[in-house]
Length: 238
Image 1 (tube, one colour):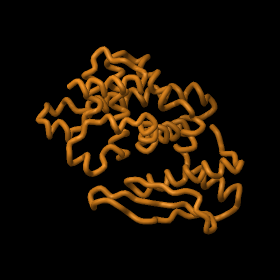
Image 2 (cartoon, one colour):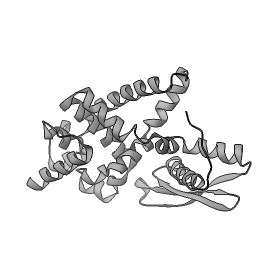
Image 3 (cartoon, one colour):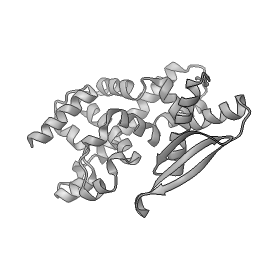
Image 4 (tube, helix red, strand yellow):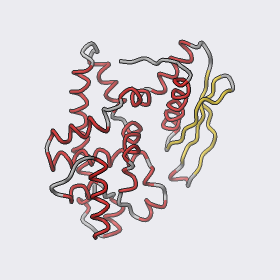
């Protein structure tokens, strides 16, 4: 019990918010596999908090984009928001916080790599937002979202739009051909990890991995863009 409380306190420092009701933070970190294994009430896992956090995140992100991009029409704002709050993007932000190490998982989920799975870390990110909203209100939830999701937008936008940015750069500016290559797959049948590279005229620009080929390609494209940015290339900005 003391060890768990200490872990929660470390997490509070990591996210920059101290809970009045720490049970909310614990719930946000609790996967259904853990509640099933420990015979805890099903409603004490993160799923309801994730539902709430998803709505709060969408509202805050919508307001942010509305104010920051007053020249974009509704359709472009919708696409931009979708790219910023999609599963790979939120998982990217969750990895920055290392949320996976604080999750409470059942043994089966632990053994199949749940701590690093994008779908779970994305859900937990939204659950934390929901927990902060319930505990402290919209302003604290908004502060968290701005700090950990909407900050460093240049790098994050590069990740959100990595595949389209890479296509525009290579085919539009460099006038070269490129392709994604499946390097292989690992893991059990029910929990495969795809390994992909992106190559330009025989040169590997970046490698990525993910639970789907699309997620692996996005990560590979992001790493390729970082390499090309280091070489002095400039990417589009909204």
